[in-house]
Image (cartoon, rainbow, N blue to C red):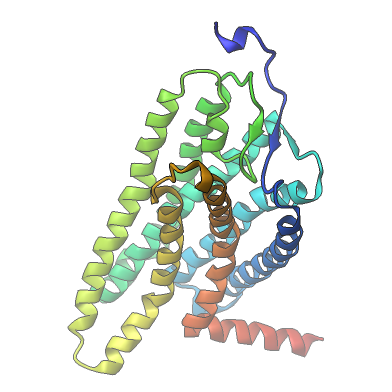
Length: 319
């Protein structure tokens, strides 16, 4: 008999999180609060300097400002829920709040995938076709590229979330995660989820596979061009303009690959350990990566570093 005929629809979910590790919850609460403050401060400063400093009014930094704003939005959609689950004995979230958080996280994640691809294209044109760079990467082109990234991510999230929210949830309401992660929620549906799975596979190909391939091909041409530069100083200067972006890409996609690409442990004795590893990796992806982005760009990009110093010195002068 169909379970949907036996039970009333769910009105809330319970987030399991790290309930089995109360000491770890307290430690992570402090760490995540500190990291969230760094995310807000670091990305907020990057947004400010890309707007206020005329030296950063270039396509590369326009996309960087978008990335920083996106990281703030992404973490703000999930971190408060994670922190609340660490403090509250009964870790419940309403049905509507759960799918609202799912929508925002999904939209920001998909947008970042596309945006990193756009940033790779910017670096490709700058290094491989420097004479055409002002023509190809002008304001008229950059704004639609950024808007298109956001529109694509939001559209994908609307499709995935609307399909998930229509499913009947009438049995177990315990989500084995910190947040309303879509795969963890779909496991609770008391209906066939094959359409959702197929839709997510297609979305992953479009929003993960295509950008990764595009970034890889871009950097093959970029590296080939850099190696043809005769002087060592010239090669170093050219590589320094894209090293920060490459580092962010490796961390971002590397974490996703580790989360979803590693084989599952079939040994029941190792299931709990793997479950803990999966959750901590998810935290790294959701909190540590957005915190590292402004640090990487501040340390590895001399223009950003100079702009931040200038902003700090101006702040001190006005005090």
